[in-house]
Each structure stands twice: as C-alpha cells, then as structure tokens.
Image 1 (spheres, protein in one colour):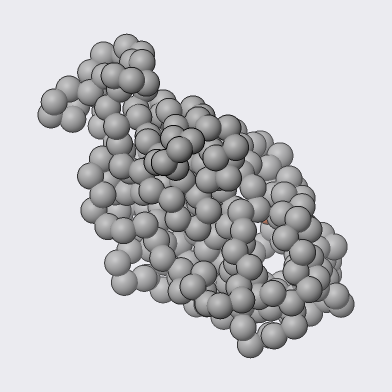
Image 2 (image 1 turned 135 degrees about the vertical axis):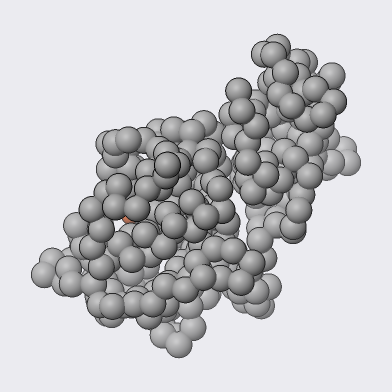
Length: 302
Ligand SMILES: [Fe+2]
C-alpha cells in the first residue's frame, strides 16, 4: 500500500463532533483508511486519539496489517476546535483552519451534524461548490425554476493554497431557516484545504453581513466520507435545532445524488467530465487538487 500524500497526512481533519465524543466517552472511526480510537477521560476531560489499525514501522512506512489494541497503539495529534475533534495522523505542518467570523461576539456557532456518504469526499466538496444544482436538487429552498441561470463569477487562487469564488449570485426562495420571502443571495465559496470548503452567504436580515457554513469532510476511504457541518450564523431569529434540521434536510437531498455519481472517486484529468460556466469553481478545484498532488479520493490525471 502506498503512502498517503503529505498534504493530507500532515494536516488536520475533523473526525467527530466533540459533543458526541463527550456523550459516548469513546468512539472508533476511520481517517484516510486508518482506524482510529478516540477516548475522553471523564475526570480530566483529556482526549486521546490512537491509531488502532495497522502497525507503523519506525520510518513511518505502513507495515503489514495487524490490529492493535487501543492501549498499545501509537497516539496521534488531536485537538478540539469549533465543537469538533480534529486529528492529524502525521506531523502537523500548519494550524487548524481559522475563521474570523467564529470569534465575532453574538455569532451562533454550532455543529449541524455529520453525514456519512458513500462517495469520495472530494466529490462532496465539489458538490458543495456547485451552483448549478441548487435550482434542481434544492428546488423551493436554495433555488427554483425558472431561476436556473448562473451569472458569471470570479474564481481566484488563495494565498497558501486553495481557491476562492466570489461574486456568485443566486435567487433563493428560502435561503435559510428564517429567510422569507426569496431574494438574490450573494455567495462566496472558499476551498481552504482539499477536504475543507466554506460558504459565506448574505444574511437575510443584515444583507451586508454573511452567515457562514463550513463543510469539514472526513476522508474515510477513497470512496466514502463523513461530512461534518459547522454553521456560524448571525443571531437573528435563529433557532439552532431548526438550523440543524434545515442543514440535515438540505444534505439529505444531496446525498442520494452524490452516492449515484460514477466513478466514486473524483477524476482530475481536464475535461474528464463535461464543464459548463457554473462548473468554473469545480474546474479550478480539480486543477488545484491535481497541482497539489492530491491522490486520495481522486483519479489522478495522467
Ligand atoms: Fe446541494
């Protein structure tokens, strides 16, 4: 088995909602194909993450399969941020992503849940970026016919890696749990890491300020993932359980479509799948993944 590329191995990934770990006291999950056991000490609140799958050779190469008990398994870097548990399997090369909005007073920060999807996590990120599906997949909520035209928008590289799409404008009948009536919503998307994407959208009450929804995708295997959703809303008439239900409902509409995509991994070759204007961000995303050498969850360009 080949090594996982450092851009993923040496970075932080969400592996659980903190609240869920706290409630269960321990849980098992898989990140980049590596089984992990998370535990929380009831007295100290200390969290530990151990790789309970394959044994690791001293040089970091993956040795033959052999399940390890949680006690003897190597521990790995773990942290809690934004209500989620983050793990880095290798040596962290940079900090966990930061969002200035989450530090603003009065913002309502909450997990909107974790959804398991039987497709590459890169496909889940790309779907989140895709403006053209809103009027069809989320008709009546995030889009509506005949408002299917996608206006031109800009896609630029981000300093430090990733891409940003600005000037996106979409008519939405019900842009959020409190939005009524429909209005043209300004969107900004930023892909900050191969498996992390954030969406800023105009708040229905304060249209000059933006609500934020981040998708932290946990690559489980190359063809399956868990999408963890963080919402950071302005506090106007927001009811967090309703936000969670709304986001779960919206993601529930995406899930069957994602799971029916073939191939399940994301092809990175240019023109591997038909491209239209609304796919500008998706084309830039694939190009950046390819240039960055991301292979896990992808079908690399030759
Ligand atoms: Fe969607």
